Image (cartoon, rainbow, N blue to C red; front, side, top):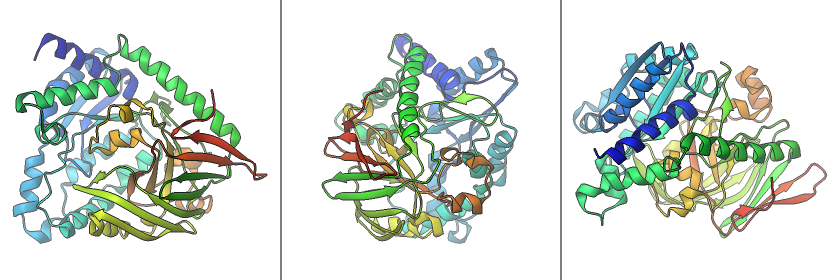
Length: 421
């Protein structure tokens, strides 16, 4: 590694520790752990992980542990393991995330997709694994959606990902080019990345404050192929950038992030919407989706690519066909302007307005963390094992807010904010 690259990697580690999880003295830290896409921290992340571990101890961490994962081992399992074993998952990996989460300690997860890795695996097998995994991880996700602890998800390159994004770049330079893109969108290239993040989070917070005071009863989204009205529940809360967990620690759960988001009313979504970017999810890339909503539920869904996988995902549980999130992102966001499709939900959702099918975040409703599932649903919240984001924004999208007295106010015009903060 060059000295310049090492300096940037060190800055990235500091961003994840000081802005992402905001690690506090005495906290334990788990790096990695199971997710739908990975069994743990990718092997490619080892240089970064070592930097994080060293800095974490210097910041006063009580204990740091790493759960590793290898994408090739997961591929071997899908190819060669007995098909009737695919719903099994090692309990110890789940226990690691559960124990750290329940104790309100910190967790760093890495997003390192390899978009073509699972291309040869049968859709039915991936769908079966997906449903079983979500069911087994529910106790972890309940703590996550309850905003119990501080955590961050952040990207780390791998060879397959770099090959997919930069096929015209010499092979030996592809991963470095992906690293440079990540450093740029994560504000690592700024002279003082921590200050840059503080300024960015402050701006996002001002947007949220504006929207929270308005308490719109609905949002209207219009663009070519999209005419969607999203009803909003009473006492919904817009979030963006940094948030404060129940353990009292303010953290930034996604690095990078450009969105402000909240929960819609699960039963009050009407109209049609078309996606503007492919969606990489669960080892598949879903393209050119059309969704039709009536009384909050998807009653028609098509896709030009991976439609079968989309439809099977919508059948995982009752809440998978309803919305749990609406997020606004200006078309001029750095991730949009970089001009890449990253095949990463973590990154791509921050290039575009998007809707999230499935699980709603409890902290986007006043006192939502204290409600039972039944109370949360009665207030308009959606419960599901799934949370799948669909990018629907573009430079052609307008968004209006509808007040209780039916006054209509512009929020976005041609993909850009229509109000100042």
